[in-house]
Length: 211
Image (cartoon, rainbow, N blue to C red; front, top):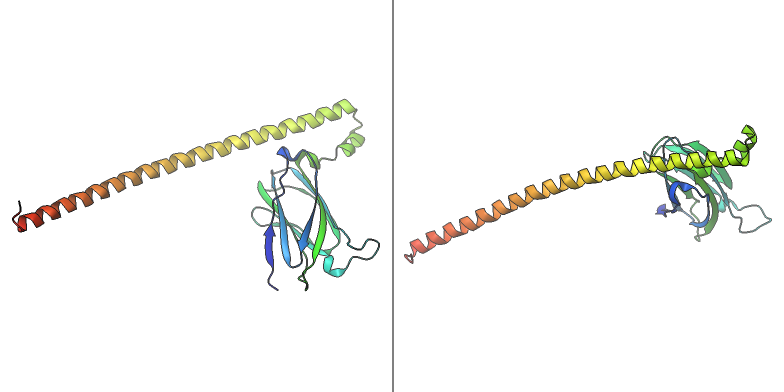
């Protein structure tokens, strides 16, 4: 059976400051992908598992999933083949949309497999409880660390938005210049056609001795 691709978008809060846990269904033989906009050098953490339709019994083979995480340049960072659950913890190497795709084997009749996913990135991926234990800091110091990281991410987002705005303005200026040039070319063509028509009519009338 030819595999079909179904991509749906998981909308994450600004700066991914809240961990996201979602549950969705995969149709057999159809890949379903989720994307998240990740920043370079940030952390991304995910745990996923198949929800067993028959709790207390082994998971049927046709409900096992294959998983892959791809960068914007289609480099595969994580892969799992016919598994019940998995996880990954990675440092992002590229800016942009990263695709996390899930797939089950084709099956007749078509079956739906339910997957539970918890995907965190940025500040939400930081293990603050571990940081507190390792560094033996008090609650106030831990909160200050969270605030510091949050401010750093906000500043990065602001600079990124400003760069995008400058790129958009440059694109608009370039587009306007092209439109202006095309407008002049169109005007020249229209005037040329009008002049040719006038010349043709004048020649016609002269031949007919009308003028």
